[in-house]
Image (cartoon, rainbow, N blue to C red; front, top):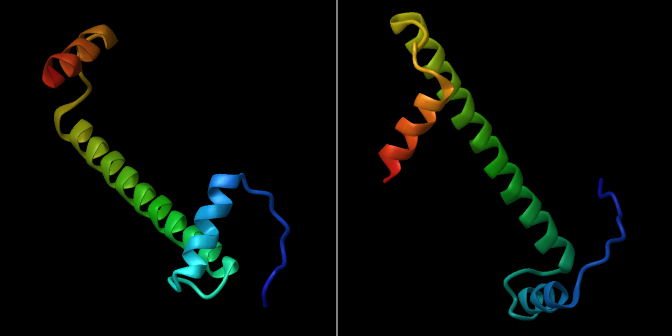
Length: 84
C-alpha cells in the first residue's frame, strides 16, 4: 500500500523531476522519487557490506599479526606517504 507524502523541492530539482516524466523515462513523479530511494538504499547496503568486510578483514589481521606498535601519528604519516 502506498504511503502518501507531501514534500518540498527546490526549483532545479523540480525541473529535473519534471523532465524525467516528460521524457517518458518515468510515468510519474512518484516513480522517480521511489527509484531514487531504491538506488540510495542499495548504495547504503553495499556500503554496509563493504565496511563489514573490511572490519572482518582487519579483525582477522589483528588475530594473525597482533596489534601495531606504531603510534597514531606514525600510522597517519604512513597513510599519507602511501597517497603521495
